[in-house]
Length: 362
Image 1: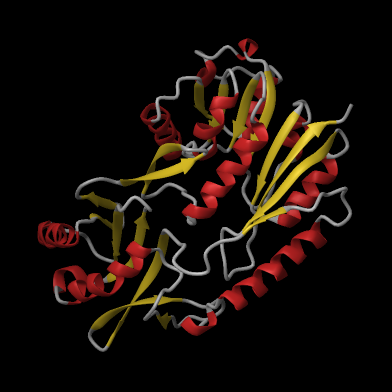
Image 2: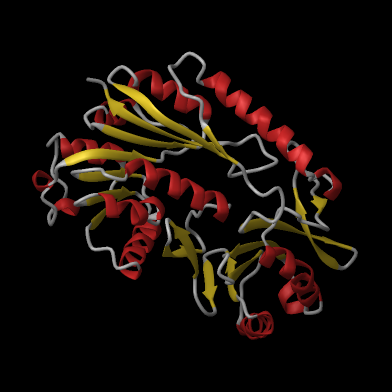
């Protein structure tokens, strides 16, 4: 799309199309009208990955269209957050002015925050030596950013491998460590709206919360205030480490996080097999009332669907309306939908996030 095509009118049109597709996906369910959370049409994306295309002696930002081998050059990136759009041109100019930095540069990644931090990862098809490190440090100092270099079996972190985001939810600031190789929500404004929606729906809860696929503790940190105890699971070592750091940074002391898949947690809860990772955790001490799941696009597997049906309250965060609808057919046998929302996390794409609160039928 050209810059002129990113208009408010075109944004509203594409959002209405996505919401209509969402409604169609859940049409056969007793689904309430969802609250719709809109994004800013421009300047919303806090992270971005670009291919670097070398042509006429210069490196250019580029992307590939599906099915096309030759990339197209990116001159403007209006959906990028303020720091990304501010850095793109002068950073690339500085790289092109230095042969050590530009030679065999293959890809460039931005990770930025609303709180003013930026981390840039330079990925190469060659080993990184002392000359590269010296040049990269000058680049880092010049632009007041963090720089990481990557090549095959090599990673050079010059300053730090993360940025710290600050999000305000219900009047409280939450600090989040966002690691370069870990997953983070790309749209900070919509992420904040998702956190507010989930928090408001769980106010006044009792008992304990279990969260599957907790990532870096994005939801966990905010929702812990509504429960006596929280047990969170995540399979990624990087995300588990970040989650623990985030809970400590936010002075939250009622959360235990374990590195475990949803399938393994189901086995543990069913007492089907012991896990050394649970040696210091007494599952019998928890009074689970609520479960939050934020699965990948494939949705929940059959065993996890059976697991969540045990809980009185279910919060399902989805990135795929079709797998959400498929899962809800099973969940709604025992639960009914109390509240729903859609979040335009990815404007100008077909993707739409959603959240559903379900309560056990009586």
